[in-house]
Length: 352
Image (cartoon, rainbow, N blue to C red; front, side, top):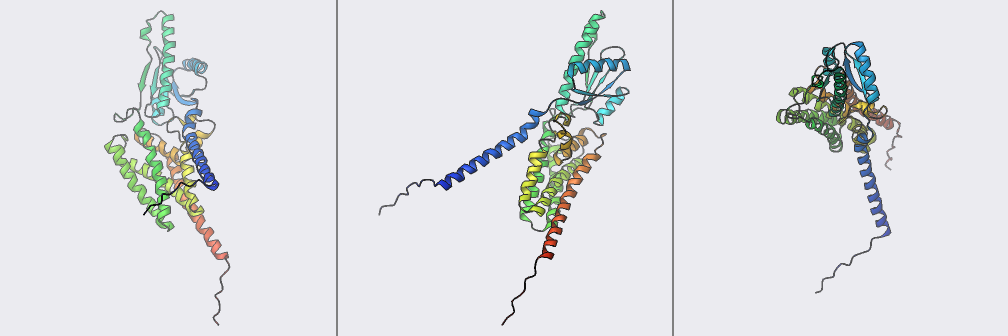
């Protein structure tokens, strides 16, 4: 018996159109992701970096004028009473570093590698410029140029287990994706609103403990306390998942997309995880700190390296997103109740 061989069928015009639509949609989606993740690096401009400066008033005025002429608006110089005050400003994250002018000798540049690699690199460049000036002044005064050395002193160092800060930067991804995945899965698998939020809280607590154990205790990327790191990571995950659940309650399945787009394509690119938020164009750097990724990144760095910094704003932002998700769910419940109360009652047919 001869087995019939299937002959290839030509693709219908409708099939070709669907293939084309899928390809175009995929290309657009890829382009959006590429823009979202590369826009900060291409549009950020080194500017307005808060840096402390201490010394005699006439010295400060002269160095400020010289730095402004050489670097433009790169630095936003913040006066400090003395070296101790400059160090305190760095440790409280008011500034990213400082220039300490001496009555005799070359200045000292204080850096904080744990604050931001880009900021530290900028300050190293400033130190080189100050070194060139100090060498010229020493030569003009007939002194040995080797005696005019600008000291560069790291005030807040990164962990020895994370010397480049890549591990700390990588902690941003479990906080972001943990909240997104948790909110999406709970919204799809659980129908009851209360159970969704209870599940999100439990997930955030367990994920925070696991992440703190791996990133802190095991890898040494987070040198701060175990419990505070678990709390920061857990609250960050809960903030994102709560917002997504609230969006789903209000808009249905589309809420997952709304939450994901808000978190990954809007908030994450302007979170300033890689560069100081002052470097982003316009108000976007400051706006980014009001979203979960920006607040959580800042908070995680502070509790590990800058315990003297005030973090009330970041805790308030994360709490606001958690409460915001709950409010969206309450609004959705009220809308459903109103629709149910205004719907016409169905009259049962009377049996003959």
